[in-house]
Image (cartoon, rainbow, N blue to C red; front, side, top):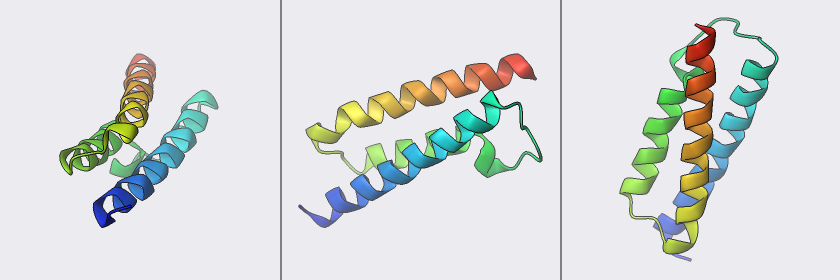
Length: 81
């Protein structure tokens, strides 16, 4: 595995974990204090950075799934605002 691929795998795992955290926060109505890091837009930008690195084809489905989850989070958070 090349260095870029290792970094992409690590970053996608981190983004996935943070999306899971945000899904729980939104589901539990625990909006608390909002920060840029609790915004789906922040994680979309991070995901787009990883994709711009040139993901291997095997990681593309994972990136698309994360993007769909971010879309759902954004829709949910906007409907509660």
